[in-house]
Image (cartoon, rainbow, N blue to C red; front, side, top):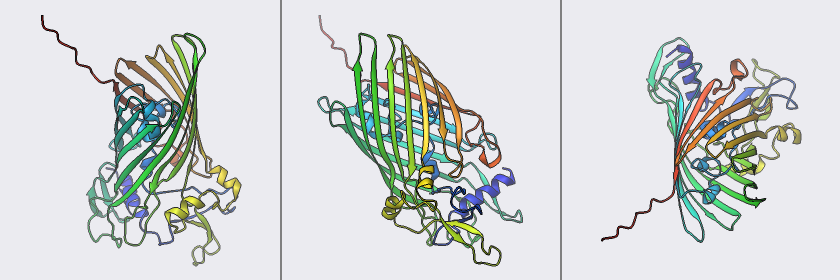
Length: 408
């Protein structure tokens, strides 16, 4: 692999664990916190990559969309309202496709529904992120080893319907992050080790349908979910980092226009519940008087509770930390779908802005979804999924009943 990627791999592998115990620091915009770039960062960011081509085509909305086999990622509480008893889905997402060919995210999920009077579900998923093969080199282009860094998470969830309109769900997650596998021992001063963490998701879901006439009806759904609430992850004995604990709120409205046509609009708002980098002024001779950012060393509880009021720029900066997703979906005869969406993130908090589009096909128990992220930005602002097709293959079905055999 090209030396650029090798150097990048080494940076990813060591950058998270080479800063002081106070946290990672970076040079900030000299204008100060008000309007300065101050991106909120965490470890294992792959947990926030949308693994679902349906939602991926709708600007990454999914918290309140109608449930399917990928609901485990968006909001596990949706699953008791699934129209089928069983479902399984597999999604493949290339990553940095324009630069390297072997980085990808794979996602496998499924659910089983049971209980006639009180619908309940159990669900599970596996998320695997491969960083490809990396040849580690130092600043003098000397080899430090070859490895295949990877990260994965395993989920197990349970959800149940509380009323004809309301449900709740809980899932537990194990996270493993080996971002410097193959790095030759003794090549750095860092006592690197793979990171492990445990977390949980807790969600609620409300949905109600209004019948207008024989063919026309409308549905409103609302969801709220806290994801990745759990322990920090550590790659060395001197530092631990927050995982992407997130608060998500979502709403969706579906209008069945007639026997054949259905239209859905959806909105999601997300905010990371982790500390915002704080301002600090450099005192060393090479950065005297320059403004830097550092991540405070807080406990998980303190970081979560303080995440709504710790931005250096005050309330206006807190508002800029919210990400917004908008999406629309059109179905014809519940067989063919056309989707589009938009994702927005403030320029001081990551500057991700992109349009998405996609298609869906449903036949009997078989579903196939495609998503495409429209290329935008350039250089470091270019989205890793630009000019990339994602696809999901899904099967949803009810229990197969055995036919009764009568003897003559």
